[in-house]
Image (cartoon, rainbow, N blue to C red; front, side, top):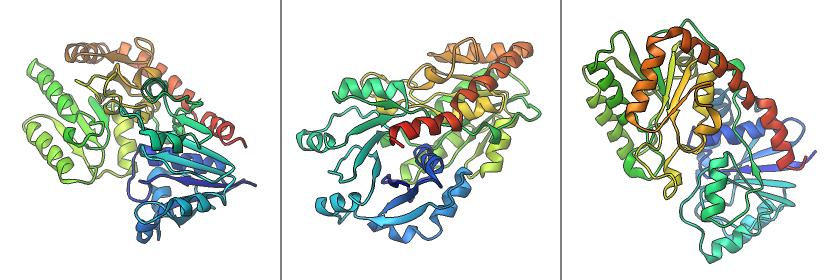
Length: 365
C-alpha cells in the first residue's frame, strides 16, 4: 500500500471540473492505497464536512479518503513543503501555475490550464524537480509544449460514469452546462451571453416550441454575479431558463431531457495566443452525450477530441454554422436520433475504468 498526497489550491472551496477530476483520481486509488486530500493551512476551517460535501456533489466513492491541512497557501515555507511532501510515496499537484520543490519519491505536476505565459527562471528550476508532468487533453499538451517548452508525459482524459447520465423522455430543449465566469476575469468564460443571443436570433427567425436551459453555479466574485445578471436581462422575453443553484438530480434531469447540447467556450478567442480562454477539455459534453443529447459544440480547445464531426455530433466555428447545424437537427428528428445513438456509444470511450487504468500508470502503481 502506497501513501499518496493529492493537492489542489482550490479543492477546499471550489466545486468545478478540476475538483471532480482530482477526486476521481482519489476514487481510483482508494481503498488499495492510503490517500490524503491536502488543504492549505489557511483554509483549515473548511475541513469539517468537506469530504462528505465533495462525495455528495460529485457522486464519488471516497471512503477512506483523509482531508488534512498542509503548509500551502499563505504562511508555508519552502522547507516545510519539501519536508511535508517527503512523507508520501507519490505526491500529485494540480498546479495553479506556481511551483515548489517537492520531496516525495514520485512527484507529479498536473496542468488543468494551458497557461499562455511560461514560467520565469526560478519557477522553471522548481518545475524541473517534478519527475512527471500530465494534462487532460491533447490540446493542452500541444499548447504547454509549445509555450512552456516542456515535455508532457501523459494525456489523461477525464472520466464520466455513464451510469449516472441516462436518456429521459426528450423535450424540445437545448442545454448548456457550465460555471458562470465573467469575460473580465481571465478565466474561460462559457459564453452564455453568446448562446442566449444565438437562441434569440433563432426565435426571431421563426423557431417555436423550443427552450434553452443554462445550468451551472456562479463562480465567487462580484464580476461573475454581474455577468449572470446581464445575461438574465438579455434573455427577458424569450423561452430561456436558468438553473444556477441546481443540484445533481436537477442536472441529471436537464441532461436526460435535452435533445441538443451547446458548448461555446472560447468563441471570439484566439486559441493559439490565449489557450487558457478556451475549453481545455469539456467533461460536460461527454455527460450530455451519455444522456443522449446531441452535441453541437465549438471547434476549439479539447472539444474536437470528444466530438467526431458528422458522426456523433457537430462542430462549428461561426454563429451561422451553429444555427444551421442546430436547425438541421431540429427539422430532422431521424437525423437527431441517429446522432444521439452514436453519442451514447462515444461517451463510453471516456469510462471510469479507462481513467483509472491511466491513473495507475501515471502513479506507477
